[in-house]
Length: 237
Image (cartoon, rainbow, N blue to C red; front, side, top):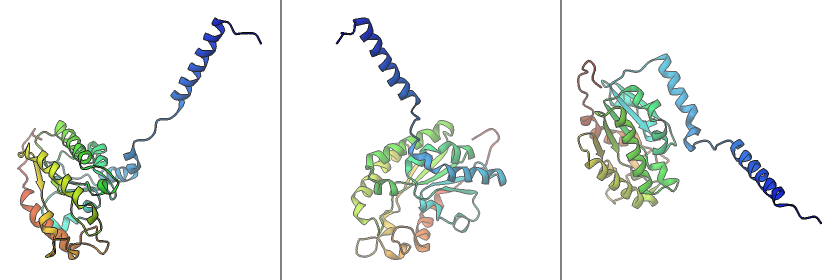
């Protein structure tokens, strides 16, 4: 068999490399994990077109504990917008922050997320990093906005995760303490326990995960005093 000359070998190598690069370039990029919530976000945007919400108010964002929060019943006289989407993680609220938070130029953001993150296997450190990213994105556009993080709740259904729940809350509480003029860690944990030191079933829906009306009543009790809006001033956000 004839040996290929050096020039021919180089040409074949370049052709193979070029084909490999072309194949890699043609391969579509994998969608961002948060892109699966696009339909939920689009629904919010269509609602905004139909009924534009008031700006400079309060935005509630996060997972199903936000979705199920009856804001009109709980905070009747406050301009609060619910932008929760059930099953989401903190990283999802971060990914869509400009479309479901900063566009409303809120004075206050109430965030609940982290529950599903731990269930999915994320570490407390990952969740705390996502919180830092969320804060950074909000304050880049709205430096005066107050962000209230509602602590990850201890629950009947996910009691096995309690050590990670507490570790997550400890990290985020420490982050909030570094900027206590703009960040608030709302520690709802002590209100969630019964006499036996475990989550009180009466505060939860039958699934042991989501809150009952009694559970929300306790959260409202802690949160309401923090939802004080400043009078709007022309040209100020």
